[in-house]
Image (tube, rainbow, N blue to C red; front, side, top):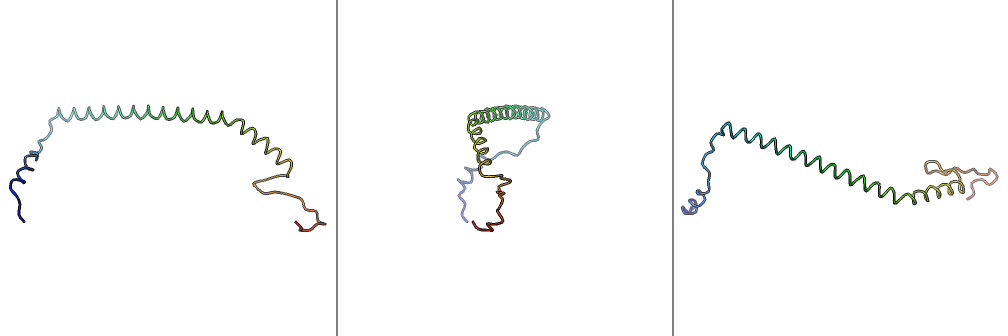
Length: 105
């Protein structure tokens, strides 16, 4: 395979020199920066959690307040239906059948 020397030299100019070991000062600065970044991220996450929690509670309160008339109407309707049609337990209707009528619908 043919390799163009001018292209190979072009990419070699961007290559890095071998890495040198870090000094104690560089390690200390990296540690302080890492701890600081972690602290900032933790503070941001706590703030974000508080905002989301506050918005969620406000939305729940708003929906609860706006639906109170509907809940009242549903309770009243349920009371009227249960008294008019019989006792309902877990979705099953309990009714008494007159033995003289048998199983006629």
